[in-house]
Image (cartoon, rainbow, N blue to C red):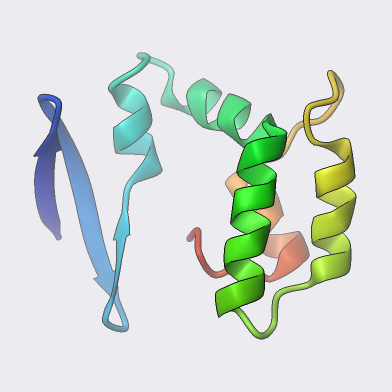
Length: 97
């Protein structure tokens, strides 16, 4: 595992099958002592969901666009919550692990 320093915060980078992934949890720790809350709020945002969905549509042939559309329609509503795990499980996402 490699690490980089971004604004005085150590960010873990792991390589899986030649692709590099950085830790969202490490990034979120820069903003709060509760990184899970930061990530949960980020995942509720319509712009986040649209970005993740477009990325998956471009680079993931097994992505489920119908399920993505359901999340996109709910994103931003007060009752909408989404975790990275749920995103991955429901849509077959590969951009977040």
